[in-house]
Length: 310
Image (tube, rainbow, N blue to C red; front, side, top):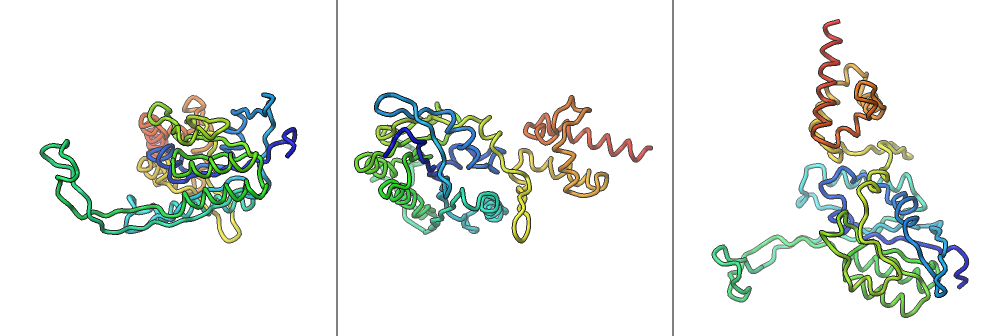
């Protein structure tokens, strides 16, 4: 393999790790995973050959970003719209990147199991001396196996020169080890957390990596958001309202402004434009903070009041 040519690169994302490490509780769930790596992550790293010369990187044309995930179970979802919101997100990625992004699904299992309960009296009591309780145990199945097999297959058949793993799960480390032992493919690890101090890169993974990135910046996530509406063959897919910051305030603003603006889509067009009455800021961005959301809501209420009085 000629290492002077651009390294044919594929990215393998552990969706569970990415969500809980970077996205849960944030307004960045509508994430453009392709753009995040093409424009933000990969340009930030350097891969060198045995002579310490930097090598250029190019994403593969087909399935350059593989996203390993599982459909949320409705009877275990934390929010009423969790299932539909996830489905919208997956459809948005498929519509926007039919060739570049591949979504590989495992599944969730949920079962009643017996587990040892931590003592309410003394948490230092050993598990063997604690009582049993019946709990619901939900597990994501096949995602880590799918990720490992896809990456190893791509490496062993010569589809790639460079594999980027987005995970901090040590279950994947045997795949990295086998790739390094059996191929000349370069390996990189991106730990999907926003704050590297909260969770450090796992040594079992990084010991097989040619490079590592310990976190993904919040600014990178914010710059890598999908368009609010993505057209499709049958119908457009729109970002769920619950995935915005301050969704309750957003919905209140939408309902107040719809009669004035002429419909929901026109409200969003107004929100997405710089507003001279808000020091040139974008109302949709102001909604990311409680203070900003209150400012936008107050402006809309005053605007409507002025229209009624005039």
